[in-house]
Amino acid sequence: MKNSIINLNHEISPRISWFEKPNYEKYKGYSYKYEIHEEDDNVKIFHDIVYGGGRFEDGGFEVAVDFTPYSYLSGEQFKRCVDEIEKQKFCEEMFDWMKEQIYQKRVKPD
Image 1 (spheres, helix red, strand yellow):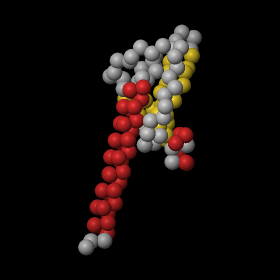
Image 2 (cartoon, helix red, strand yellow):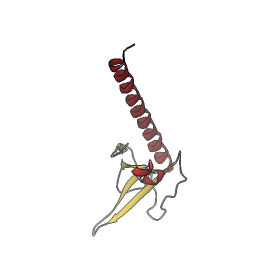
Image 3 (cartoon, one colour):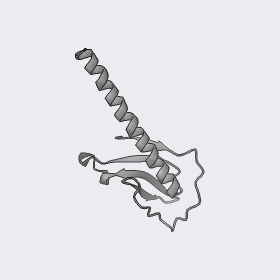
Image 4 (cartoon, one colour):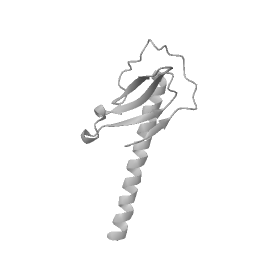
C-alpha cells in the first residue's frame, strides 16, 4: 500500500463549508487527514487516508487521495476510500500468496 493513490477526481464534491472542518470517526482503523495550503490567491486541501498512525515502521501507512483540492471529503467518500484501500490490500495479499504457491510448486514439486 506504500505510495498508493485513490482517485476520486471524477466525482462531484458535496458542498462542505470551509469553516466546518470534518472530524470523522475512525472507520475500520483508518482516519481522514487533510492538509491545507494557503497561497496568495487560493487555498487548497490535500487529502490522505491514514492507517495505524501512518508510520510504515509500525505497520501503518498513508494513502494519498486524488480529489478536488477545493473541498473536504464527505463522510461517505471517506468510507468508500477506506473500502477501496481494503480491496487493494486484499488483492495484494492474494497476489503475494499466489506467487508463493507457484514458487513452492516449482522449487518443491510433489
